[in-house]
Length: 173
Image 1 (cartoon, rainbow, N blue to C red):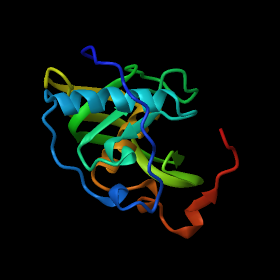
Image 2: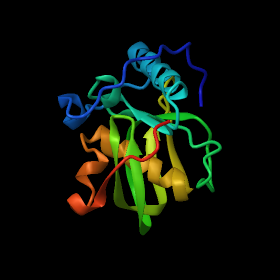
Image 3: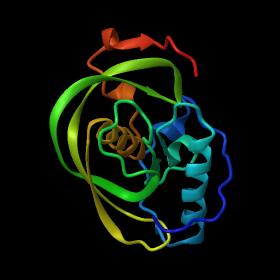
């Protein structure tokens, strides 16, 4: 991951904010605004307890960029550390399993969502614009799909099988 400027902590938007349902536009990952947004996403994620990913929509910008860092999470197998991807898409997804998800933008609920546990995502790095493929599994695969969904204007609530699969959050971080 290329070096980024110092990030600013941005306020996180909560559902039903309209920007959370807005598909993101492609970004120029080498542009100064994009590089600053990449740094801001990581800075905001770091100060948000339990947060393993943050999409631009969650800080009020409908663009295709997100950060992920699953370091230290007990469900993690493969971990690429903290990184940001721009204009990312899922290349392949296999081994779907149902699991419980939460979201910083939906603080009062969790939901049972079926997602792939083996994943390849292709996207661009901020600063250089280099295209990379991230091959991962388990919890990091789930986090990446969750963030790609955000950049498409989807929340995990859009992926649950029905109202019976939505639960009040029991633990507040």
